Image: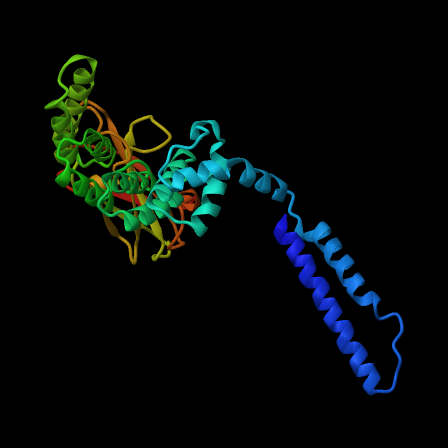
Length: 341
């Protein structure tokens, strides 16, 4: 509350100064001003009323209470010390707010790392990435900082491995080749991204040290899955469709999708593409797969949706092409004709 007192004192001083200037100008004009002494008091009252009605946010009290309650915890974390009160006993949201305020005044690598980890718990990967980058900048040789950044980048991509995340993981593994956490993060996120060569590499590295018991069984299943999906990836590589349309304006967005016959919901794969003209050729690559590759005996269909808006989303694509059975390997691209609803 000290800053409130200081602000009110400054406002009072300003009011006194205005009163003195008014009096001086009045004397120069040969006038006697009465009652002007009330100006400072009026300003003080108005300032207090304005703060009470406008400036005092409904959450300010909670914020001030959190600052007082958890400041010592935040400062201990920033200093790399064990706080007297366990961080696990502090509400995550409250600790985030207090840490942010303290880091502005006293930044540290451990403080930014802790803040990034808390944002990760809250499911805020963009904020986690920002904090992790600051931690890496302040402590570039610490593997934990790079792992936090890799995790944030993977979470931003929906759990999928990206090239920037891979670079962070490689940085750690180049220095600590047996780092289980880095290998596990690599294997799982590469699996989700359809990067099965990397997933296989990750599962093998983990199995080389943890081949016994239930852990070994889980890792072997992960490795087998990566190898199976890698083999199927070749079968489903380069699926093509030619999308045609009559009496439809070109320049919009087409969505070509693949799904199991009779299924609904998220497709197996989908490709979004702006088409400058019709007919348009669309190719589905490994990066377009949203789910695991289907079993060999699965019946597949391919279809398309279209919106004249070049930046349109799939839910705006009301113009459709009826689905057609897809036979693999393809002898020729699937022909899809868009029809007005």
